[in-house]
Image (cartoon, rainbow, N blue to C red; front, side, top):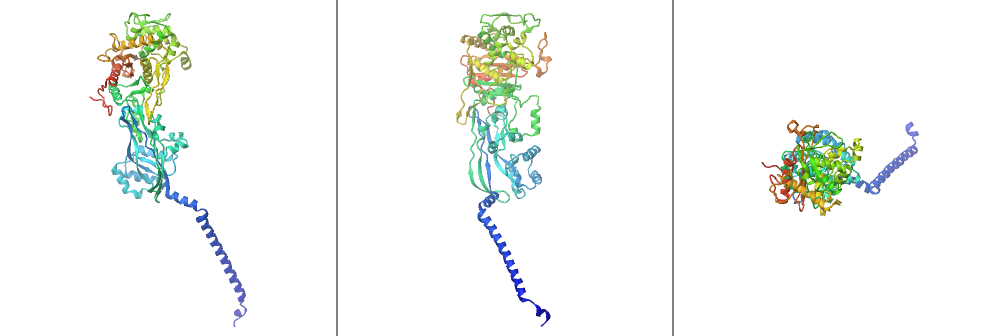
Length: 625
């Protein structure tokens, strides 16, 4: 037996081995306990939490945008509808390399630079997680096929069918309807949480016109759906769905045929036409020329097209019937004449000598009549209206003063917005002493009375205001608010009466008969425009200076540039004995209210009252040769 074997301690080794076994067992038991505890936590304690997280990786809530409400004219003609369009969109949360993905998409389909810039702008905007961002609208079938073949390379890319706004009558109603456009960063900045929810899944919003004014009604209410997706984010199936509520339709007072007739009548002139229903205040026609195609703006207008519109000297984007402020000229003479009768400043027998000029007492300045030789030695108010005698109105303005003229004109709506249901209306100017003091820092001078009496000087009015003024005259003092929309959904909009003037019936008779004389009298300024009409028209022509003519000089059309020539205006209503329609016309640089503006109104009257629609294409409003 060796020395090592003699002194080996088997008991000690057994104790060490046992201790190691116990330690190892304890450690193993502890590890198993931890594993069991963790397993219990995952499967029992936090089962619902992790199950929900798992479902979120597989199940997603998607907004379902509502169908935008349609817009019709009074006869049921469709003015704004929705057309299906395939849209290429990207979900940024599912794209690992956005630059590479966009470059690949540009190889497969044509993506204009303007669309690309809008896409990157939207990438920087706050969006809900997993919300698709549109990159390209109106894909062709060939482009859709190319994207489908390369689907495996396009993680996070979707092609969806969407409804896109379309205006079938193109430029005919551009300034009335306005247009929808992509939701911008400025739009998002104005949204509250409720609006974020309403616009989820929707990429456009009403920008101008009725599309903007009635955005809340047209938009509808968003729906939702729970969808199951695969690991690449592709939708496998729809689990459940809450349908959206479509927007409400609008029916307008406007008549497409009458609108097209007014456009055709204006021909190539710049200008505006407004026609109102005297009984209801409904806007039957509202034209601003030149116009533009609102379809260009729906999915994002190109920089080239926008620059062309924005830099045009003809200002096609400018809404002339609502924002154009023009000197009303002689179109306000019936109002001023009625004021003279109402305030007993003049009567039917009062006459004025008209040698072709007027001079204030103690003033050497001559205020010229448009007719250099004058209108006669004894001009009464009726003749002053029929022949548009400036000298009579100079004298009337001097006698009556600004306070009475201002007070009376305000009752016709001059100097304030009509509150028609379309945004961006301007108020015009019907000046007073206070207005001049506040705006110009100057007192009111006697000569200002003379200019105001003939609708010049500081006076400015929009075509919509002139139409309301004329309709108020036609209804003998009942001022109604103009309205574009007749019905929202199934709810009719009520007639809104703004005021009822208290004026003697004989005074109304006198002025309206004088306006009939303008159209049908032997010396009426617009008698040629009324020739052949089998109904009576009451009207008033007007001419408004664009540039001042120095004292003692005559207006010389040939010496002026085309855009410096006088504006031509006309206001009127018909039939005179039972007014149905009131019309206001402004033809920029048309020079002659009787020769240019009045014939436009006659065509509108004939179209509405007799169903005569000359040169009008009721579909596009195009001019026919």
